[in-house]
Length: 333
Image (cartoon, rainbow, N blue to C red; front, side, top):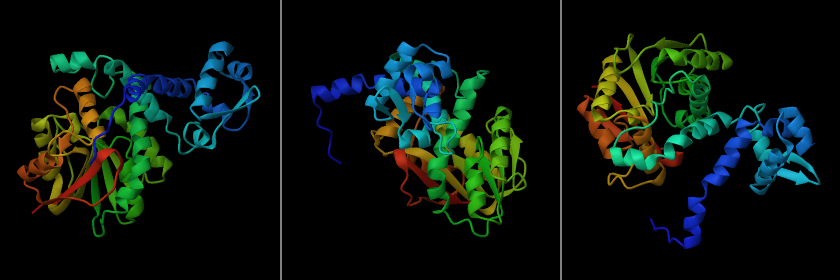
């Protein structure tokens, strides 16, 4: 791959890129897109609806218009079709939860130099403690992300003949929902922390799958997993741990699998040289900021960990996924 040829203008645009990100975050946090999705309003009119200062709001609306997320005619603003589809709460494709999760991460990223210097995290673990707003943004943000790519993953993985799936650390259960939707004979258990249960049960019920997908509370590091399964799905959980923690997680998954069971691991996967692709390399820094030992892993590292856990026929599936994501599969002897 060709290296980027930098210019001073490129460098300064990157350095100030957070201005645009913060404008987007403010627009989502203040929910300006929802009322503008179905009608045109002036800044004072929207300020009255949303109970905020008209002058400051007009500045934000003008910036969002310059970013092509709003349209302005005269003194009125409306959401673009794209913004109405992905930034209005009334849309089933709403991505505001993951955008607010990014917003909650920004404070720690501003102190990245400290985390690098000390080699230790500077924010709470991704559970966000008792901050319910941040927890909802995280859990439902994971739902937002999974909804974008789950359909292409489940359609590319053959689970015919499989009867019971373990969605380990499955959060709101998005992948279990899609796997069960793709495979009518499949049932599933979403295994995650107790604080995740309300989000999972609400989401599973929304898709009409409460009779086929159950939620089980537990800590996959500290506790074992009850029940037996013939397929285990581990999506974006290994990166939260160091190699020792990953070994424990894989050991727990293997112990829950029947002979011949299939294990599937999705991660943002680095090159074996660890210096790309860009998103997994940056995501590794995000784990430095928030976890004691978490990081992104290379394909070679993930395969070696799976083989050390007793998994055979380990291979990366030929799936084209965004942000350097990939799925590595293996089977129990």
